[in-house]
Length: 77
Image 1 (spheres, one colour):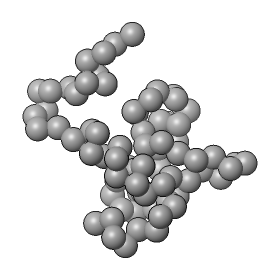
Image 2 (cartoon, one colour):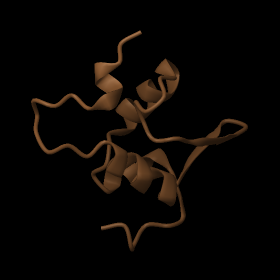
Image 3 (cartoon, rainbow, N blue to C red):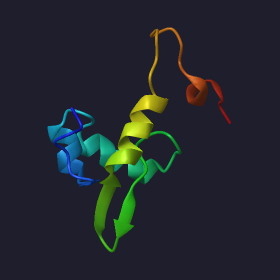
Image 4 (cartoon, one colour):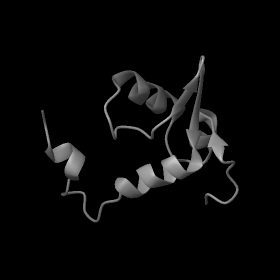
């Protein structure tokens, strides 16, 4: 799945790979909550994602049941 992706990705790349919709990625960045979306790099107006960071983010959000909200969701401020 990830072998064909470049090392630096755009939000379009993530959407095309079926990871997350561009609009959702944009909303995640605006909200600024840690863990909500994959970590990103911003250079001027350009937003990019490291492939390794996206893979790590996906693995951190892996669940075995829909009843388990995960560690980030359980801790409400």
